[in-house]
Length: 204
Image (cartoon, rainbow, N blue to C red; front, top):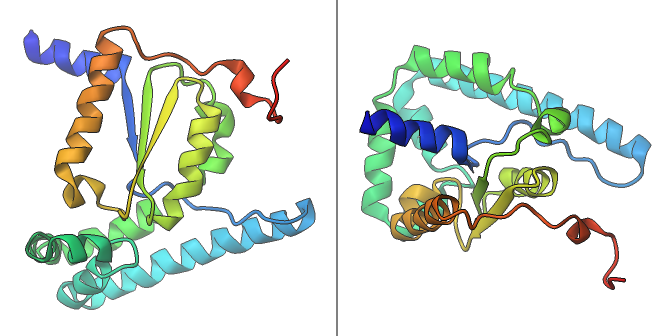
């Protein structure tokens, strides 16, 4: 009963969105026409990258895992904790080559962009905590999107951190979660004040 209650509490009352891959990030910048073009280009690039990764996994897990572990958003972990990163890379190399390729093609390549799910995301009312690292470049803008779209969301950006924030700084990561759970349990987690969304620096 206790285990079920805890899981029910976590799932129903609190949603934690840790940005381990936030979906395809459309590079929408400039005017609308340029934005649409950039969006389509970004989607295609993400699909091509996922396919390339899948083929690399199929060619040999050891080298593919090493390259994956040395990605731009994982070198932060290596710099902070070389031993921990080495263990992470070793365990990654033990993954199934076939399964990793399927994941790239069946999940990474096919998942929609968060920007396509805004209407659904906006319906979330449960207390929500979004967490990302400030050097997890593909996840920063999606994090801001979720913060601005979900009225019950808070956003934590961990400093000098990449994609593996729970491994890079587990003490800080766990403390953020503990603070969030405590606030929800105490009824102190508030929805955003609608006035905070005004596009102005002065209030009335």
